[in-house]
Amino acid sequence: MKVLVIGSGGREHALVWKLAQSPSVDEIYAAPGNGGTETDSFKNVPIAADDIAGLVDFAKKNRIDLVVPGPELPLTLGICDKMKEAGIDCFGPDAYCAQLEGSKSFAKDVMAAAGVPTAACRVFDDLDKASGYVRQKGAPLVVKADGLASGKGVVVAQSVEEALAACEDMLGKGKFGAAGSRVVIEEMLPGEEVSLLCVCDGEEAWPLPSAQDHKAVFDGDNGPNTGGMGAYSPAPLLPDENLTEMAAKVAEPILREMKKRGHPFVGVLYAGLMIGPEGAKVLEYNARFGDPECQPLLMRLEGDLAALLKSCAQGRMDKNSVSFDKRSALGVVLAAEGYPGSYPKGMEISGLEQAEALDGVKVFHGGTKAENGKLVSSGGRVLCVTALGDTLGEARKQAYAALGKIEMPQSFNRTDIGGKGIARLARRQ
Ligand code: AMP
Ligand code: GLY
Image 1 (cartoon, rainbow, N blue to C red):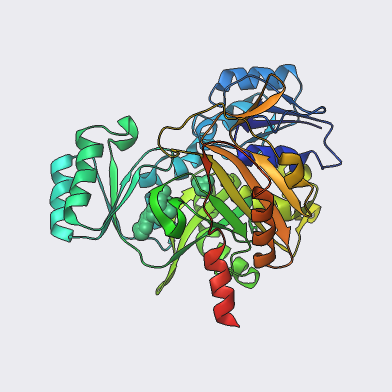
Image 2: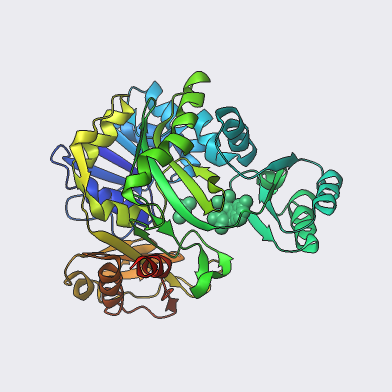
């Protein structure tokens, strides 16, 4: 089959890499792709991820059999609806279901209807009312822009002043534009975070092994939030034996609710969970694979990914087409200095071959492009250096060893990816 992967990050490189191993796949295109998704066999096509008409046109003309959108934007813009209208299988939710990620108030409403545990919240469109609520509740509080804000629209406020400033930024000053013209204010939940990604065909939510992201930019979870500085799987916080029970709590009720609303959920339902004293509560849903969670997860996936995704797009999931390697996988992001703020581009990258010569290592490209025969950086999260290991500790050792072979000026990485998981395992011994 011919596959079109939409997006240009590390997640999309991992998807292309794994789909290329599917016996059923003959051709893969990435739109717009990056320096890793263009190989001798596979091509990038210069169509932006939000150019829905252009993507549908390309898919029709090239007789694409399966479309796999990576990021959230094309999903909320209705890429799956439009592909379906054109008779093309698309592994992702329709625009209605994608609101689970695209609107935090919509997600809260669905969670309430479905009986999924989450933080208590109130929704506001009005600055005075929001501020009044903040003063009445007191800190700590979490203020969230309702719409998509590239992971930057959430303020965990430790003081009333901070929460008021966040409301003022979003509702008063229009910091996130329309995405912040409505805010969700919720209680702060204590605990540790973990990601549960379920592959869905509209009827069934199949939990993949757990993963843990590292959202803060610096070691020790310090500094502003990013898209994710590294991830590993499985997370000892959510072991394999608890996956089915967790999916029954946080994913299956959502699928039932969406089906009831006439919009069966197809694609990846990603639950961001806080595991605390009262058990698991949902912080957010994403309607797609996580980046960088996808990279270690796909390192562990064995079998025919294309067959799995195609069967889901057709509403008849075939789980038998894939299984998971028992080993751990861990990915470390190499970022450009300044990220998640402004950062330089065009730095030359070398040492990838030496890194990938190490056992069980794969380097996924995030923000790279080929220029005059060289590989240069073109984004904030440039690479995700990922390794498999018999234990989480081994995977971490190997990923950092591989990272050590790579050179790029004006770059940095977190040095503590996997630290919480390794500490948890040590406490158990
Ligand atoms: P979200 O985009 O909703 O997942 O929020 C981004 C990050 O903010 C999460 O990964 C958490 O670290 C933090 N966060 C969001 N909501 C809460 C909450 N209710 N309590 C504590 N931390 C939160
Ligand atoms: N790594 C978090 C996300 O993809 O949203």
